Amino acid sequence: MPSGGVRCRRRLTDREVRGAPPGRHGDGEGLMLVVQPSGSRSWVLRIQHQGRRRDIGLGPWPVVTLAEAREQALAFRRAIRAGRDPVAERRRQRAIPTLAEALEAWIAKEAPGWKGGAKGHTARVTPRLFALHLHALMPRRVDALTEPEITAALLPVWRDRPETAKKLFDRLRGTLRLARAQGQCGLIDWEIIRAGLPTRRPPKVHRAALPLAEVPRFAADLIAKDTPAARALLFLILTAVRSGEARGAAWSEIDRDAALWTIPAARTKAGRLFEVPLAPAALELLAGAQRAREALHSSSPFCFPGPTTGRPLTDVALAKLLRQAGHATATVHGFRSCFRTWAAEVAHAPREVAEACLAHAVQGGAVEAAYLRTTMLARRRELMN
Image (cartoon, rainbow, N blue to C red):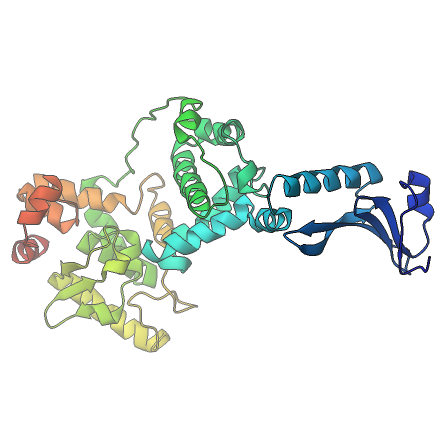
């Protein structure tokens, strides 16, 4: 028979597979070895399904041996006899993502609701957390993952870094639930996984704060330094806001005539717009920042741009000022605690006013918040002054 035809006198042998010339060599029941002029060899199964003839590639030889090709061909023929479409099934199987791919899809779905969106901290850090702690699972297809191996992967980080482990647990659960909703994997029992992880309630550790009595002297040192980082940290102390809110303060958010700083919802922890009354000292500090901006970064939209980049400062730049002053254990966030202590012990401010200055949630929860529709701006301004 010509080399382009199919030779099917009898079943092939391993020796014949190795030495077959270019052409198609039948092994029976539709299974063929296709040999190219270059000498490369591959397996093809010809099937008839719903009146239509199709060729299915089974893989190259010797990656797929003769015995394995026969095994695959038998499985396809059995599927057809059972009334299934093996080609469609294979297409679906190939469409099933790995955990790494499923994580990308989940982040793309969830990121619009996160602070900073697809370019925010959570979207950037999540893939790194998975790659670091769940690296053995990342190349696995989601339909192949089981409760025991997920438990085993989470166990080391669950013991050593409980907060990180909780984030991994929640984000992995979200990823696989999305994959299941898209028909890519079966049901994972998260109660079983949680039961396989040890119960651990780590003691709460509050962020260290500078003693209240030392804050005035430290603030005076910041005034003397008169650097972008020193101004940003002093502004944080005078407004009792979070580090990221102070570092990212933009001139478009400041109304100096109204002595008001409006932080947009996208930049607050609670995801709600927050108005900060600016005391005279804060306004004076901003005036100095404006003069420095005109000298260094006249086009920067930020109140406290980095000296070289014009972009917002990092949290490390502010923390460095504490270390340089000999307060290595204190944290930038701790100045919010300093404010709360001062408001209670020195200013004798009402609890609800002091808490409102910190943008904390209403203590009574959602019901009280639904009825308490004031921001107490006037009372907060009096306290901040």
